[in-house]
Amino acid sequence: MFISFIFFVFVLGVGNVIPGGPSGHNPNNIFLLAGQSNMAGRGGVYNDTKTSLLKWDGKVPPQCTLTPNILTLSLNKTWDIARDPLHKEIDNLKTCGVGPGMPFSNEMLARRPDLGVIGLVPCAIGGTKIEKWQKGTTLYNQLVDRARAARESGGNIRALLWYQGESDCGEQDSMLYKGRLEKFFNDVRQDLNSPDLPIILVVISAGEGNFLRNVRDAQLSINLKNVVHVDAMGLTLLPDRLHLDTKSAVNIGQKLADSFLNNFYH
Image 1 (cartoon, rainbow, N blue to C red):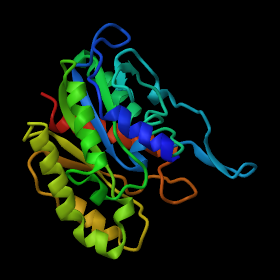
Image 2 (cartoon, helix red, strand yellow; image 1 turned 90 degrees about the vertical axis):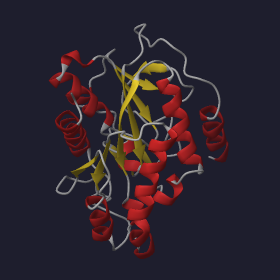
Image 3 (cartoon, rainbow, N blue to C red; image 1 turned 90 degrees about the horizontal axis):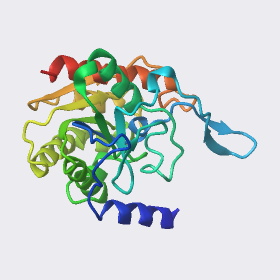
């Protein structure tokens, strides 16, 4: 596991994106996917009782259909056709399944066929607290590095999609959450030279700790320009009562698309 992590950090820290996607053109609409496990995707992940290992069931819903018009920035910074599990290279120490990225993109193209090619930049890592995303940390540097590399191919970063907070539901972390999250958003915008970068955050519906309400209240009270939210409350979870099942991952992806089109698409 340690060797895999070192490889992950090394590859993300060097090189520039290789121009020209698999269809010969690069995405003109780039979306950053960041946060923890529910953004990385756990839909269809189950506990194999025979091996005591988490596995993905391999079931891809129609809302996650692959297409040459949805690309993903790979670990080595090339544009490839996107497919679930979208974060399998990035969140490589965990078992990934269906997440919000593909249903988000397919919904966008279904409603705006003239949108062009979408480029997704997976950056989410399961089990990460907001303090692990503060400026100067490994995760923060990787996010900014991959975002810059994606932008070098000629597209525009249209939004950051953020789904995180379940690991901050302890008493102390929940009290510090709002300040840390606002600082993270402001720092990302500054380092990407995009002060008005649209940010859509998912308000969490489950957490590891007794202070879920504190984190939800912090997320709902963020008052920064061009920051909007969608709420995951009421969606169905896996038996672990923490991660979205496949149906809910599709639902939240479609909600993210609806929010972007209603708030930021002109």
